[in-house]
Length: 393
Image 1 (cartoon, rainbow, N blue to C red):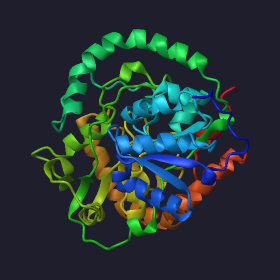
Image 2 (cartoon, helix red, strand yellow):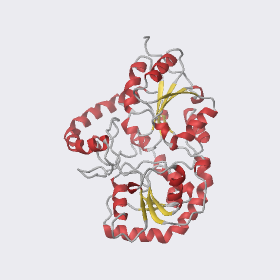
Image 3 (cartoon, rainbow, N blue to C red):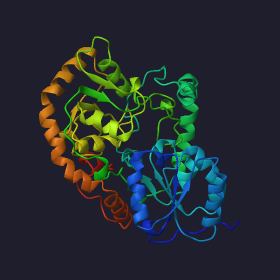
């Protein structure tokens, strides 16, 4: 194959070839964006997993037939390994990442643009914060749902801690190899469509609901994420809050997804809108999970942790609880305080709904991505003051 091709100047994302993960597209979170790309006549190839030989061959033929810039969107690590032989000589791509801390370093180091669904990935590279921000997950854990990856993660937690010092030295070397300037770190928040989140008046059946997974186990491939967090449960705060609310002697009516079958979207909305509060946390890594926007647009206020860099509107819709460190007595008090504020917080959610649907509309978010590539700043509404600081000061 020929040597690496130069990256074209003035990249227009609408004219790029987007390679998307079919695994990620199974989630409703990403369908509105995919629909918007189709509406814009963007060229899309979908990889249906690492064993999709037909898809890999189509990608190889397509990318080597032109100099078109490629955008990897939501590609999983095991899919990236299969794509590496196709792109190791060609390159000329950008990376749009969801769980950015799991992305293979060769791809992030050689990407033209690094595109982050979560601003914390940009913040750590700008020196505004650290991944995990000093939180310490428990040394040992047991998975709430028995599956191969969760069980393996729990068993590997101890060995991972022993290997962490050596991995941190490797990460230090990898960080020194990176030379992507700040103006090529782009923010690409999760999208939402009004059709996904209709406002319905549902009688409250629950005081609180947990409709999220409580296990977040990852291997940190990105050198800006701490190796000390390998295979730890970064959703420990969410798990602890759900465990407290699900106690046999709990005074609260609580819907717990762990005790229920998979919810289809209409059932999911009924549970959320039939709850006075929904548990919503970004985990110990303070991540901007899509459910923050989703719950607010459904008119259901939240309990959980706030996040430092994104969603300036969130303080109006969330009763903050740092569940990872709170004592049972503090949790009881804070939950009572939350219920006392519920009416006002719900009104706040409905009050910001229209603005959120505009800010995170898929076409607006695609425009936001291009505006940043063209040198324009991120407009108000998306980021908190902490994201706008100059790390050199």
